[in-house]
Image 1 (cartoon, helix red, strand yellow):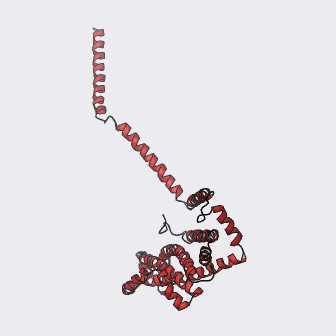
Image 2: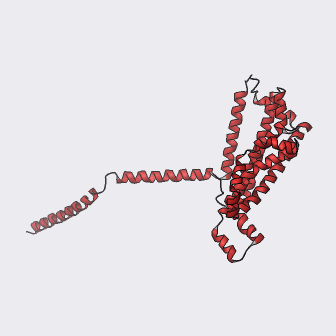
Image 3: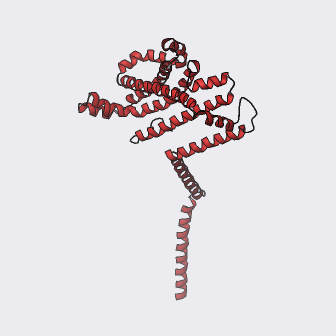
Length: 313
C-alpha cells in the first residue's frame, strides 16, 4: 500500500514536471526561428558600420589627408615619368628631360628674375583683391538695403570674366605691371566678396542680440561679432582666389609682358623650344601647389577655434 502511494506520488510529480515543461515549450515555440540569426546579423552590421565610421574619421584628420595627398601626387608623378620615359614625340618630351631643363634654367639669374616678376604681380593683385573683397563683403553682409541696391550691378560685373578686360586694361595701364595687378585683383575680388558677405549673413543671431543688449557698437562690434562670423567663409574665398590669381597672372603675362612665367612659356612656344615651354608649365604647377598648401596650413591654424570649417570635405 505504501509502495502504491509512493508510485502514485511519483507519477503525479512526473506529471506536474511534464506539465510544467509542456507549459514552457509553447512559449519558446512562439519565438521566430531566425531571431537569433537576425540579431547576430544586426550586431555584425553594427560592428562593421562602427569600424567603417572609425576608418573614415581617421582618414579625415589633417595628417591623414596630407599623407593621402602625398601618395596621390607621388603616384601621378611616377606615372608621368614612366609613361613618358620612352617618348620620342617632340610635343611630349620625357619628364626627366623637362626636369633637367627646369633645374638648369630656373635657378639662374634670368630664371629667378622672371619668377620674381611673376610673384610680385601675383602678391600685389591678390592682396588688393582680398582686401577689397573683405571690405565690400562686410558692408554687403550687414546691410540688406545696400545689397539689394547693388546686386544687379554686381551680378553683371561678375558675369564678365577678367580676361575679357585685357584689351581695356592694356589701353588704360599699358603692358606694365599695373595692367597685370588690375586683372589679378579684379578676378580675386569676387570669391572673397561673396564668401565674406555670406559669412556675415550667417552670423549667430544670439551673439548679435547680446552685443546689442550690451551696447557693443562700432569697431568693437566689427571685431568681436561680425569679423569672427565672416572669417571662416572669407578664408574659403581666399583659397578659391589663389588659383584664379595664378591663371590671370600667367594669362596677362602671355599677352602683354616682357617678363614673367607666362612670357617665358609663350616665347619658348614661339621659338619651338618645347622642353623649355614644358619646364615653365611644371614650375607654374609647382608654384600653385606650394601656395595652396601653405594657405591650407595657415587656414587650419587660424580656424582652430572653429569646428567644423566651412567648405571642408
